Length: 471
Image 1: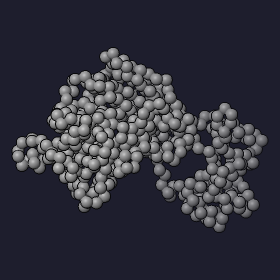
Image 2 (image 1 turned 45 degrees about the horizontal axis):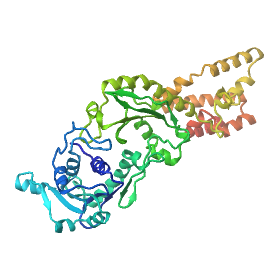
Image 3 (image 1 turned 90 degrees about the vertical axis):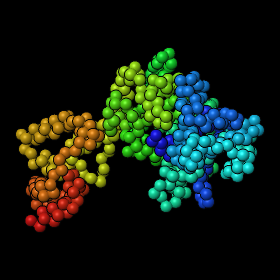
Image 4 (image 1 turned 30 degrees about the horizontal axis):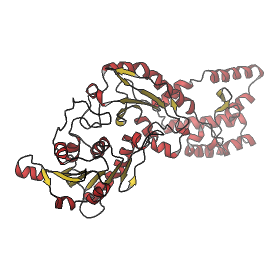
């Protein structure tokens, strides 16, 4: 069914939260027999309920569920577990009664029948973490053993599990972040991996004061309110190292833009605009939170893994109306914050100056070529040269340049030989303007590697300085 290791474990955690668990512990040993155990302190199950829960398709997906139920088809615990191992055991404690059931695929193959194993007390007591379950007084333990796919191609199953746990931690931190780090006043759950807590990963960076909250836009589907809240993340320059890592790095900012679909606060899918708009560099700061209840599952085509969904047509049309405003807000933040200050160590052809109204770009009159041109201009042509420079400053196509750069549209790469000839000719022209052998010309050659455009080609600049000075 296409379960990944992370989505399989998340499916088990869903069952724990549906059973009102406050603490969910994921354990695996570093030596000895390989297993993965998920232990919760939820309400637990009676022997009869446990037997029913082990049945594939144990619940009718059309039946009305409680608002806190994260399940759907009554398949998750079994399909998720058996996608990763050949033996899954569930031990549950409720009202002082301990019961255990097991699906063993090797036994099923041997008997040629789907026969559920019922464990006796001695068999249960010999399983790992059962003593902790008993100490809690209630809860459920899901145990995975006899790994096949998880250990395929690996030298050590335990090492393979250890590697997957790092990915699992990030996955759980994101998928269950609204349970792990709820708003003030709401109870939080705890998820641990080998006793180390998983910290919630907020994709909207709501604690950053520079994050923008756009006005909420609720929709109505079959009488149900579907809240839609858009966030515009701060520009990368206003993110701390931890926040940038939380957002997935610069590459993750682009990849993770789009809608974040939640079902009963549990994140189902994210990082997609559902083909309503293209993912692009300038919209990468936009995130849209969409909250669903489990009563609308039939409209969203929710899959068994609860990891993919498709919005109904009526909501797609509504989202189309607001998506332009959302992505425009991202572009505005990105464009405004995306312009970098000039490096003072380099003599640029253009000067960028921050003023009260914003920022201005002026041709640098102190650039050797520009200053030489102005110094040698006659009274008749000096004013014309200034008018040309002013025209360039006023008509600089900043928006078009920035959009091209953001869309990774670059000018054709010039051949090195052609670059050398151009730069050498330019250096010779400036020397001629300054006067060969003058202090100004000598200083120009000494600083050639720090003058634009020579600074972009330091190796060529050194060759040119040597050749021009020897002429």
